[in-house]
Length: 283
Image 1: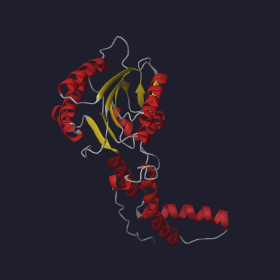
Image 2: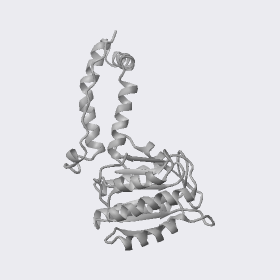
Image 3: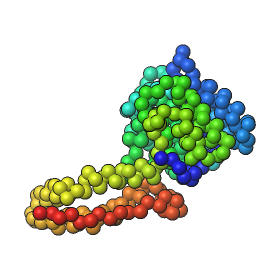
Image 4: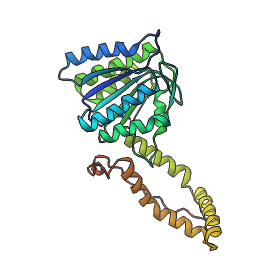
């Protein structure tokens, strides 16, 4: 859940990929944002970009990364289009899946020093979280998006409440509270990079580090080592080595995901403690 007000942005970039002939909530949002920004000045710059298809989408993201590096542009990205569990459908009918989108978002997030907030106005847009992997750079700082199909009117009302509060109080956490106050419970997915990392690590430990799973992994590794080296290593020794190596793997994942190598202060900014596993009994 998005709570800490620890990210930074100085513009709101609305990417409009609503098909021609449909109710264009992106243009209406731009008008509302300009009105809110005027009422609650000083406010972030409001930028509207029409995005007909794939080429234009990736061009805009590349430009955001360049300007973040060269001009200190720090956008909050608001994306309006159709969507499903796998990705976006853009105005011209072209499709961009989450894994295709991730490298471009990651480039923007790196340039922004892990401050990229993405708000998706597309059915099941919260599924973008599936593209996050703890073994790679974080593609965003935070994500808000619907968990299922949602009407344009419901989206407009919820995000209207969010942006009014955001520009009034300048607080992302208060803005999310305003969204929650008006939205149907469970309608929106809200997450931070740190929350996604911690959830993925907990899932890994639950699914891959039970005594049974550790023994299965040790037996597979035993077979591989036997074929490569001709040596038969006891499964218990392999399990012990796996558990001893785990804190180092966790540290390596943290440094990559949270960009410690690029921004050393992130070790303190994203303080994710390692929880050691108890050694299971392997019979």
